[in-house]
Length: 236
Ligand SMILES: C[S@@+](CC[C@H](N)C(=O)[O-])C[C@H]1O[C@@H](n2cnc3c(N)ncnc32)[C@H](O)[C@@H]1O
Image (cartoon, rainbow, N blue to C red; front, side, top):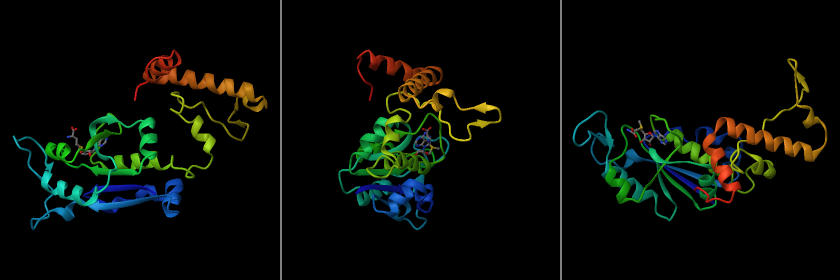
């Protein structure tokens, strides 16, 4: 069973939204499991301190290597990847989520304050993973994002398996526009081709719309898509 272990100083926020919808049903059905460790339980002083002032001075606090190291020792006892949620990490991609979903699970370490003592990153072989180029107050929401992106890819979790193949990023393109009834809404109608019943034309329209949206919105993805179409090397 795919297993997510989360280390956090806010264990009560889990499972949060992961208990809803597809991920929640799959969790209840035993398609994946979630265990949450309270980092504070590994503090040894009477105040249960998990952070201290930065060496060299400066603002904020830093998560202590000794406390976090003990928490990781107790939790990460198998070969699953140990990922530290961090704005400094490589960005999470659909390709990475697929690779992680194909493994045994993940151990996720949620940072807080100014981040974690650098020595614990090296000493416990943590890989930093970012969910985007912005700064959150803590790693918990980022951990939920990563778990959700993986869990929906587990066998049997998603409603219609075909939808996965057509989603954004599946072919390196953003998804085409979607419509549903009513046919006419506020003088806006569903594009005629989608009502034509001609599956070839529909597929061609969707593909050209996916290309247009990717070209207009994500020049980075578009360049990578063109490179792949020409047989160039694939990025990770
Ligand atoms: C306030 S942030 C620390 C930011 C850090 N001082 C920096 O400038 O890189 C606290 C924690 O939130 C989490 N976090 C913030 N932004 C994130 C992002 N974009 N992706 C993943 N985790 C993030 C990390 O666990 C981080 O240790």
